[in-house]
Image (cartoon, rainbow, N blue to C red; front, side):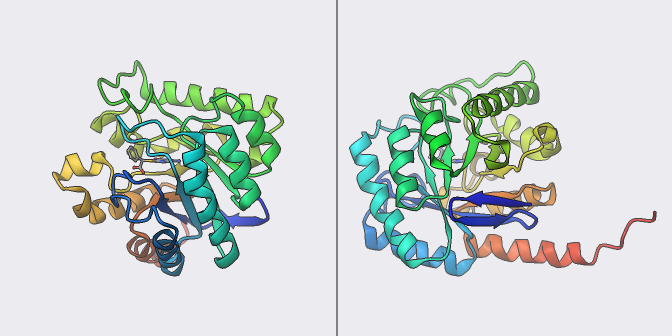
Length: 281
Ligand SMILES: Nc1nc2[nH]c(S[C@@H](C(=O)O)c3ccccc3)nc2c(=O)[nH]1
């Protein structure tokens, strides 16, 4: 299955690795080492070298309690990096934003995927995404980043998430966005308890009713950190393990910090898959 991402296409018949490129001073896992262009480009080159087929450029930290980022700030942080990646690297660029104007300018600068943790609910976002021609990732979040982790509760976790995602898919359809441009994401860590996150990771098949590709992002998140009692820089093994568990259930894209290690896990999985004896007919 091919996903059109602007001028590029992604082959979703094999798991794709999305490398996280935070260009925010307070990004939680790399402490803003990449908020300068050269630092970001060094990280971008490394992740492509290590096997990322997508780079997710984020200029607004969605950390609970994070300060709001102005439009100008988000553009200043992301556009130069997107332009330089487009000029230099053979990779699909994803813009992690909820702002319509950032979507517009990021796609004009070369982004082929709009990755919106707010699923195009901000003013003008649906129209900007529709006009962009980019692929779009619609993610579920309960509440807002500032308060989402205070007391996440669901009557029925999968029913509520599927209803939300279906409503956003419908909104896209009504805005003229064909379903073949869409990717869905349950939003691990976005208004979910530890148990909710593992219920979602354990049952990805229950998110397949929409017939759309799935993106899973759990890398270095608190679902790994709290379970293992590990600090952020000690969560790589747990994160790679989680990514592979998602891939084993058919997740088409995994959003990760540790690209080389995830790539190794994908290759071990692919070699194993290749040797599966065909089931008796
Ligand atoms: N589609 C998609 N986009 C995403 N952007 C992010 S930001 C997140 C992080 O841990 O990177 C995060 C959350 C809270 C604070 C800092 C960083 N997570 C996802 C995801 O799970 N799916």
